Length: 380
Image 1 (cartoon, rainbow, N blue to C red):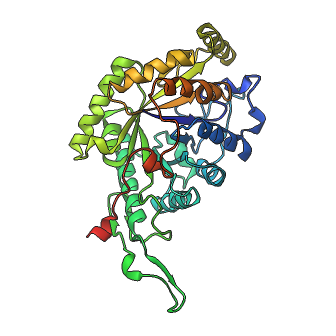
Image 2: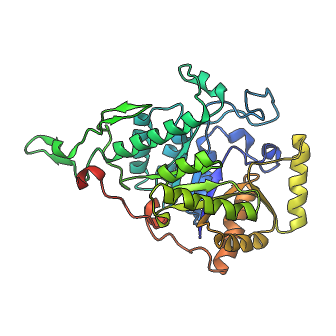
Image 3: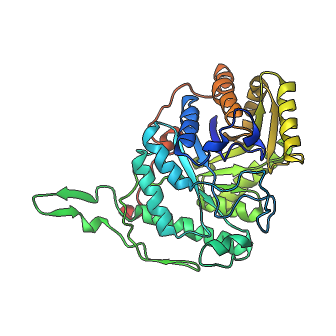
């Protein structure tokens, strides 16, 4: 079983910043994010994802809500990852970057560089922007209809993957005697012409250490399933209960088969928001208090677990039988629920033999049991 951690602001509950132990005044500091990733690393979690968006967080889908009692604003996720990578080891670092409002050439070089800085631990959470208000931050640009957003995203990921392969392994020869830095025969123009991008290439960054850093995305609709099956190494599902989880894992397997991909060469993770305490009643009381502080009952977009680490440790083992290979845990409040995950839940899962005790690879692909892919251009 694989375990990941989803990092966002002071936690996934909108009132998490009000907790006495929250470091609300440090959300815009590098140290805050370094400490969280190091804590996740101490628990031997496989990787962390870092949330991001162009627009301010909002309770409204169409525009900012104007609230001042919620966290508003974020640091750039890729820049956070670049700061965290050199001072961590083993754990994968997967920042979000939108496919709708960024250029694939820029994303490809950023994630490739992150893979070098982290020595093979980088990933990219391919995030789609469907809110029309987001377009004003870039261009301005009109956000296309959902079908077009997913079509553009598929082309975006394809271009990024081709750019990562545009340098063959060993293209850098650094031969001072002859004055040759690169072998030009090992650089390739990708010559991509699609409905949304025309990209010649090659990249300005050599092929990443992993060859292809891990690509992740969230799938919650049929269209998202098709995009994820075509483009992602890890698919995050957001089920509401076990019945929906079983249904959704089957739908993802079908989408992978339709895309001609082997399901064993990718992973399906279920997202779970967690509120954990040593006593189940205390966990429920704490969540209820946060709900009251927010002024409304918190209704996240995925499964919520409220209870003890021991109780939660029983669930993933059962859920893996429904088709999941891993879980991405969203701590309701940081640091309380983060510590409960890394210091209690992981210990419970280890006692059950459900997770490993040490990292077994220095790269994220290795940790996840995914082979380093061959370069598509060298193979041809």
